[in-house]
Image (tube, rainbow, N blue to C red; front, side, top):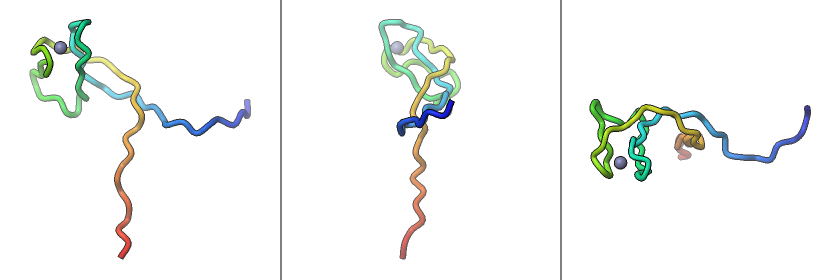
Length: 65
Ligand SMILES: [Zn+2]
């Protein structure tokens, strides 16, 4: 098993809150959610779940002076 993989963005599993309404695709990252978070689109209840997202690239470049 030594296949060279193409460079893909790494996916990480992120905890999110997803709208319970199947017709509504709104979701928010749990880290940005507030207690009692409701759907920003339809104001409905939200459900804790997971989502595969590309890892956040940290904008952390050392300043070059
Ligand atoms: Zn919704």
